[in-house]
Length: 329
Length: 259
Ligand SMILES: Cc1cc2nc3c(=O)[nH]c(=O)nc-3n(C[C@H](O)[C@H](O)[C@H](O)COP(=O)(O)OP(=O)(O)OC[C@H]3O[C@@H](n4cnc5c(N)ncnc54)[C@H](O)[C@@H]3O)c2cc1C
Image (tube, rainbow over all chains, first blue to last red; front, side, top):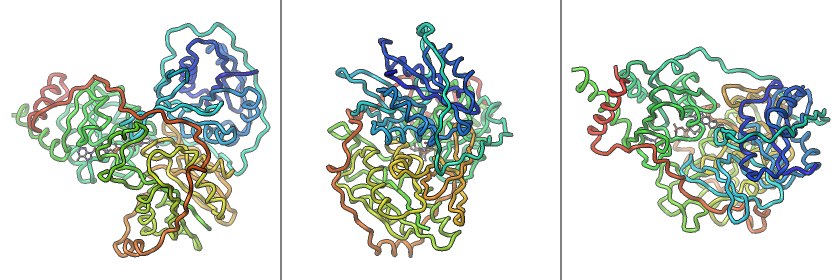
C-alpha cells in the first residue's frame, strides 16, 4: 500500500476537529496532477462512523486508528501507533495540523523516521522540479522557503492558510474506510481529562467596535488611553493581545486570537499589536481594521485598511481630543 | 532534583530587521539588539518557582549560540539559576531545529536532569520544534503549551495543564524525567536585583565547544528568506499626528462608528 501523502486528522471525543478539512485542501495542492495516492488517518477511541463518513465526503481511503487512550489528544500514543503505518506505506509527505499537539506529534515522527520536519506551512510551490514550502518568521516580517532533504518529510500546516477546498469536484468515490485497533503505550504520559475555559462575558461578541491593546501600551496605567478611545464610539469594547492578558491587565474573556476569542466586529483598532499569526487568526475577519504602531515594518499593517505609524501614547489622546472638538461641540 | 531550562536569545523584533546578502537569514550586524525569547523567560521563572517551593532543587540554564548568547545566561544566573551552560557555535544565523535539539539532547543525556523546561516556541523562527524534538531524542515524556504545573517529587510525577486551541485545556500527568514546553502567562517573570546582576557577571559560565560541521546533516534546506508579498489592501495615513487623527475621525464618522 505505497502512499504518497499521509494525512493525520485530529479528533476530540471521536469528532473530527473542523480544521481537519484543511488537510484535504493542502493535499490537493501538494498533488496538483491528482495522480498521487492519499491516505487519511483518523485517530480516536471509536471512529468507525467518522472514518466511513470522511472516506465518503473526501473520496479518499481512510484508516481509523482506535485506542481507548485516543479519546483525547495523546501525541506519544499516536506516534507509537502510527509508526507501523508509516513503515507500511512509507509516505513521501506526512501532513498534520499546526496545533500544539500536531507539532508535538510531528517532531516525534521526524525523530523516529529521520525525516525532515517543516512546521507552520503557509504555501507550497514548485521550484526546479522540487516541492518547496513557505512559512513565516519574526511574526510574519519575513517568509522562509525550505525544501526537504530527506525521502520522507513531516509537515504541519498553518490553520487558515489552506482553508478552501476549492471548487473542483472531489475525486469520485475511491474512498474505503478501514479501522484498526492499535496496541501501543504512551510511557509516562497519562491524559486525565479536558476542561473548557469559562466564558461569561459576551462584550466582544456584542460590540460593533473593538479597541484592542498590545504589548505596545507599555504599562497597565496606559489601558486608560484605550478606555478613553473606547468611549468615543457608540458600541465599543476593549480587548487585548495575549501579552496583555498574560500580564493580568485584562481578563481572559478579552483575549483575541488562536487561544482566545475569534471576533468579527465592524471595526477593530489594534493599538501596539505587532500582528502575530496567533493574534491575527482571531480578528482578520473584522470588516474594517485600523492599526496604530510605532514600527512601520509591523505586520499588522499588511492586514489593515488604515495604518498609522505613531506612538499610541501620544496619538490616542489626540484622537479623543479631536473627536470632542469636531463632533461634540 | 535537577532542572534544565533551555533558553534562546532572539533578535529584538521591534528593531529594524533586514535580510542578509545571502538571503538565508536576517542581517546580524552590530546595530541589531538581542534579548531573551519571551516564552523562555516564562520557563526560566517557572523553574525558579519550583526551586523556591521544594528543597534541594538545582537549576541549570542552557543556551546554544555564538558568543553573544552569554548575555541571556548571565540573566538566568542573576535570577537564580545555578550554572549557565553555553553550547558555543561559531556563528549566529539560522540553526535547524534538529541540530539545536541534538546538541541539547547530547548534553542533557550526559547529566541526569529530572525535568527539562523550554519555551513553547522561539519568537524568531516560530517553529515549535526544539522542545518536543529534544524530548523525542531523549525518549522522555513531553507536554507542550503548559499553563500550570504541579510537581510531585515523592512519586516522581508532574501534573500539568496543557493549553489547546480555542479555549480548551488538557490535564496530563507525566513521569519524571520529563520535558515541558511552557506557554506565556503561566507566571510573571521577575527582574534581577542589582546585586544579583553583579554577582552573575562575576560567575563563570560553562563553555561547551561544538563543531556544527560535525552535527547531523541538514534535513531541510533553506532556499531563501524574503519579505512577504505586500498585500496592497491598506492605506497608510500621512501627515502630522493631528492630521492623521482628523482623517481617521472623518472615516469613522462616515461609517457612523462614533458616538
Ligand atoms: C500556542 C500559542 C498561542 C497563542 N495564542 C495567542 C492568542 O490567542 N492571542 C494573541 O494575541 N497572541 C497569542 N500568542 C502570542 C503571539 O505569538 C504573540 O506573542 C502576541 O500576539 C504578541 O502580542 P503583541 O502584539 O501585543 O506584542 P508584540 O509582538 O511584542 O508587539 C508589540 C507591538 O507594539 C508596538 N509598539 C511598541 N511601543 C509602541 C507605542 N508606544 N505605540 C504604538 N506601538 C508600539 C511594537 O512596534 C510592536 O509591533 C500565542 C502564542 C503561542 C505560541
